[in-house]
Image (cartoon, rainbow, N blue to C red; front, side, top):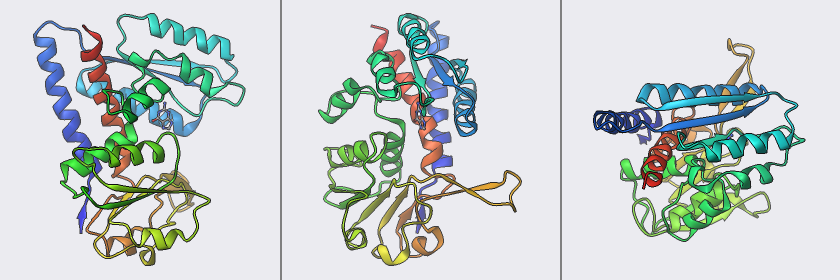
Length: 292
Ligand code: GUN
């Protein structure tokens, strides 16, 4: 069994970007600049946005954190977005999700200039990705593709079962893995909450991507010997024995599934750290694509 070490791979990717940024600065060019907008004070969102900003500093990017109150109106947020769209010193930005209930998420995502949409959530980017054109690919599926490629996991002609059809993970990874090229050329099945006999499907899979959000759902009896297992789950489960009062659980019963797998991502330390590295990669690409 080979562990797909996202912590290590993400550090390598960050190191690669850091070198390119140094070279840029030596040429007298401006460093890439990422901004993050956080509305409210949700604990998990604060943690995520905090590590995004810290990672920028580590690799020599400029970063800006824009914090808005919980009761910020949709109009005020749209105005902020318009300012970010116009800001020529900014290469890309993200609006951290989820947004407070009184704000229409779709309207907000549509307002982001696709050229600065480093999350890849705008329909223009999703469409471009689906049509094999240059696009910002959402960070989580982009991170999974990088892990598969860098560890040379065979995907061509393999049967991949994706469990989950979210716009951020399940849907895009199903498209990417069926496309031509590295980590692609797979035969993809998308399973979801209405799928019947899920275990029958996952048992046929050479690769299982779990993006369901139910802790330890995938058990050893549901996978075939030698399968590759990608676990996108990150659920906080209450645990009083831990200082934080919770532990992070993936969608895979790790120990028993790892015993049968040829490659598997751990949680934490698998797909999670890759997402930040790929957000930085998208910001670097934004800097290159938009400077012409
Ligand atoms: N919330 C959880 N994941 C993400 C992400 O990748 N981007 C943004 N903007 N919000 C998130």
